[in-house]
Length: 375
Image (cartoon, rainbow, N blue to C red):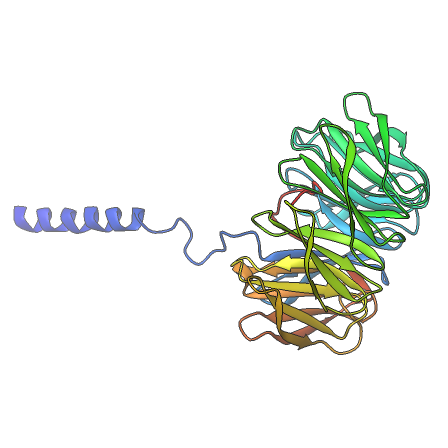
């Protein structure tokens, strides 16, 4: 009898030990990076998509012509910048609905958030302003005159300064976030447009679309230290993961200039296609996928050689924004000109599904770091 009791309790204890070493909820997703938020300019909606199942979870009405979704620090809200009605929609992702509309400047286009999660800076492309949003109150805290065609912001890692491009004067306005005053305007070139700050915050790279150049600003001196001839239609800039190279989209020339960030020299040009837009590095670091606004394919480039290794046919439409899901197994692509959201299996570099959408544009992955304009 005593032996049987001892055996019984031994089995119970062993079961408890092994159960305690298993995951808390077997089979449940622990990675948030499979949920996508996508804005659809043609239908004035925000789609929430399960990236593993290629399925729309819900579609939420937002303001007119939503350009991008923006993950608000803390993960409770997503903003959409509604260029057609001068507002931000505040979407409560848990409730699955828009809970507030914030009126900002004319054609809000891009946003960055302060490191402390207290404020957002919104560039208003069709006027001369940048709006500052109090994220606790969900209200405009200040409106700053930054220059005609204010377009793209980037914020320093310490949150002390925001750099905003202004297209019409061709300059970058430097905002002191402690006072929300412009402390300097730095001339760069015709139609200062895309902006990207290095991860350490020491330099700001500016794509001057009309001039076809890239200006490099030293943030310690707030002075242009280099001007690089990039190509016609210079716009978006992205850095390689190690920071050694900048990939610059030249929309009219149809290529990406690869620039050495130490020497400011163009080392090669990749013929990515008309409407050359943004370079996206695969999580494994081996490949680069490019969004091309006016091409019916997505170029895939070997990151070591900068040579195109394949082009993924996508049909009519071109692509605008891309996002990797599930460790890079899948790539989602949006299109201003096609009526779809594409799902691509990166192991085969093949489109496996088209999700119907009206002029899809911005795309963000749940759990990603809120926008800073760096890296």
